Length: 295
Image 1 (tube, rainbow, N blue to C red):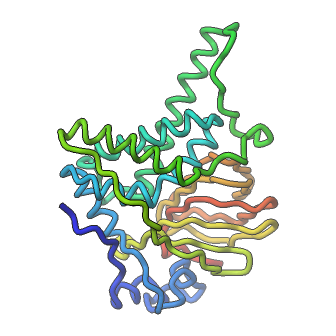
Image 2 (cartoon, one colour; image 1 turned 30 degrees about the vertical axis):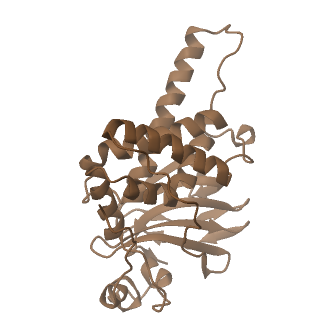
């Protein structure tokens, strides 16, 4: 069994991640994120270690990943499905997928947070496509299932119920624990209620706050929550690696594309976002290179 603990970056890793990394004179994202070298950062290696433990049947490791990611997973699915009951069921299915497919995780690909978020998006997308097909086949059904709002119709998205209450989070975990225990032949892990320690929001620029979830010094990549205040621009930047963005709350413009809650944006290395801004304010999950050049 795994000794459950998220490790932090050591001093040399902090320096590699932060402003001592010798980035361009224009500045990099890493220089903003790690300006305070005294703060401890969670290493991506810790997340990878938990996935490997899950692959060996460790329910405690699954619980740790669940506690740190199930809220953003639920919110993303809720934004896509626009159906709270479906979002709860698909959140459960997403973490069951993590349990079953942990052995297939490729450390050279996405970060663990990115891997989990894309599993959630895949689940929600499959449900959405199924519902659309069902509606075409049964156009006059008396009680059709609620359908997700189409991308671009942000007015019909439910923006008020995308958050799980503590008792709902616990209930979902109990269901997941019983399902995985049944498959493994043991008893379910039902941990005592405890307050999870989460990273703090840090204001890295006026109106821009980040909550760092993990730092990968080997691949120069960070997984984080980013929050823009209403009317705030994110600095223009050039991507040093693949960038993935999952929008959870609010609306966001990236160049000439407008994103709504539940939308996804992928940017390739070498491309430039000349203007990123939010009129409403927004929150997103962002996985990107710490070497992105800030202009």
